[in-house]
Length: 82
Image (tube, rainbow, N blue to C red; front, side, top):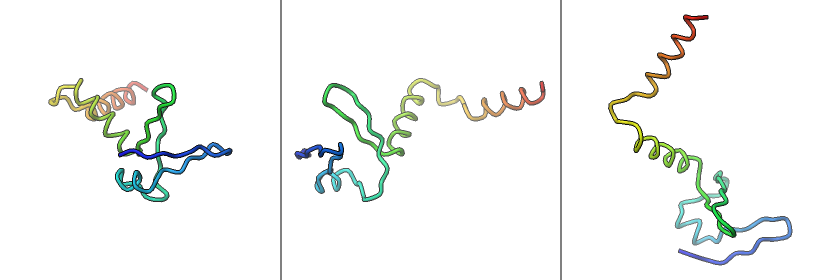
């Protein structure tokens, strides 16, 4: 899906309705805007950004490791040392 849009004098852009519908975006949704190259932006919701980060971690951390449990154990050990 592609469409054209213009940036107005205030730096605003309106995402065409068909693109918003295809992406499942609704009025009031928060978006993260990331510059990825000259003249190129990626738009995604915070939930999509979290899913992408989780996928990166999942590829690098064995599934049998529980990072949350490790963090809690580290915090408890730090608390005992204080």
